[in-house]
Image 1 (spheres, rainbow, N blue to C red):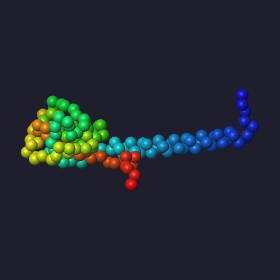
Image 2 (cartoon, one colour):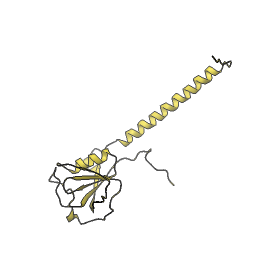
Image 3 (cartoon, one colour):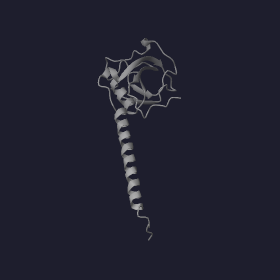
Image 4 (cartoon, one colour):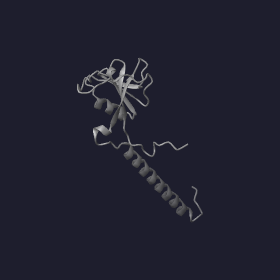
Length: 150
């Protein structure tokens, strides 16, 4: 069994453990701060997302992820895409919800082409045949998400 002959080794070990505990505490606090920032929700519905316009689509989808629902609404689609941390969402043909971080591959279309009512809320429009009503999700940007200036 090895023993240290240095009387200061116990003090040095305690000091190093104290520094490590302080570092871990600071790292945890920074992480919690960032999580709190990233999960903050805006209070009023018109601050959660903004309508951008009517955009084309094809079978090679403009937005990468989608969900179909018989009771589709703008709010339902927003919640699905926001939960998955996407930046944009689009509604198509009354019942389809698409999510993605880019949009517009097939160009802007006339608003008249996005005239299909949402199956879950007849007061709202949910795109058209191969036409997406595109919305941008508003989210506070966290320090941990920001890219350094080049």
